[in-house]
Image (cartoon, rainbow, N blue to C red; front, top):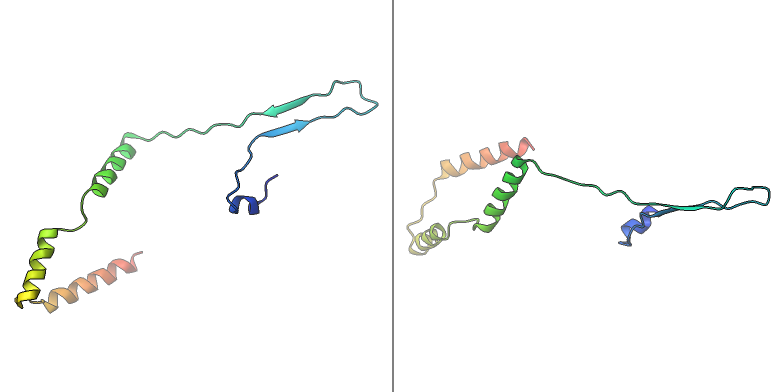
Length: 103
């Protein structure tokens, strides 16, 4: 039997099991060897699961930020016209902390 150390070592796990029955001197039955074939698992996704997979692929293909907005903010910082709304920033920080508490 394969130990857990072999699994952690990245070595392949042999799933074939061979049962060997040997004949003793007093037995009159024939010697047989049988192999138990490994069972195969199957997975099927519901239509909802497939839809979630498609949405995930679409989101992964899109950029995660608006490059036009980033360029606009960079320009505002560079020319000194960028202002920070301290109340909005504080409220967003509090909201973020509240969301983390729910995890």
